[in-house]
Length: 511
Image (cartoon, rainbow, N blue to C red; front, side, top):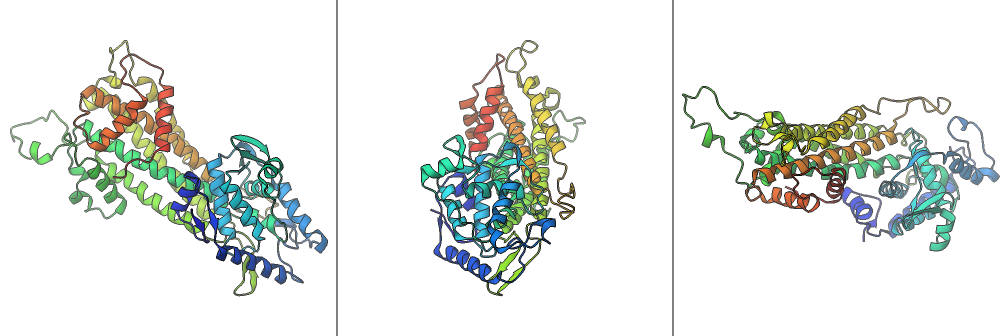
């Protein structure tokens, strides 16, 4: 059972969000939150503290009467719960809740301890607030999305509970949950921050890591199908370039192929060939989508690691305003809620995921184009050429989906639009960046699913299932349980969706 102590890692998100392990709150954490709240309550007397006894944003010049300070917090929550569009999927909302819980636990926010306790209870009971995709500009954090979270915590709004969308008040009564105590600045404390974009971003990294493993498997399998020379994966070659990602991808592919009987040694075939040959029937070097995989996926690996590092730093940071410092006995006003760090990392992530989908699409095209590979029938058609179509139809889907990714990979980071009476005159659009990245990742899984079905059909046609590596064989068997070998044309969309579901929900064997 994970215990939250104010510092989270990727594995904690995997355990709590993916495996739904219950969490506990350490006594030290609860004491820290309570100490921060008590200090701010005492410190704010006879002082002007933004969001405690002032209005918000461009309205901050208005002093709020002591008798109205709690109404101020409720007004903020209710007025900003204004999201539209599709509801964010529960897994991503839960990740946002965990991120918010953690940052508010650091003792820099001054919120009442009930905020932490109720969020933990919702996570453990899988009660998921209704939060919409549209609304956040990512400057004062995810104001609109986090307002929907705050709305639930005060017992209002709606939640998803046991697969149904229901009023929060109804579910709280059923589960015996009391809403949070709004005592000082709980509205602003909950809403000022980057936790939605960060939570979505962390789930994005987990799915990207899984996608990268499948891309390595597919690339390795294609090397087997084409009986490629293996020196482009060699340690000797890849160590001459100093990028860690390239070296790691090459190592993973060598590991994947270590027991394959299909890849070839150049020295066995070309270095001992007759000098009298003027034209080689076989290619001396493979196409780039086969030969340059370490150089293409290496930057993906490096970028993903950096994105994870930045996001974990963000989730373990104080990202609201103002910041309470109990040790220095002071309150600092600034802009820790600004989402530029997350926005930029999400743009970087979606660019490399798009490149993965482009690689998969080119590898797919190589398999489907008999004039390129010279060993497979057109469209890996196991039926009658002309009468049957094989994988011809699904290539259109892979191509159009890849094209959508290329369009979506334009950066949100530089799409600032001033708003809020120009108080927020430069913003991050981080929530949009995270959600678009989510879409790009889902698209990439569709392209890879189509590629995997095609790889399995190619292995079937060549009759080499007993010669491929054990890891390729495991992938082959998994796909074959979903998609039987087919010669006659069949409706493909159920198979593509089932393979996509399989690979997005199953961890591939790490090489």
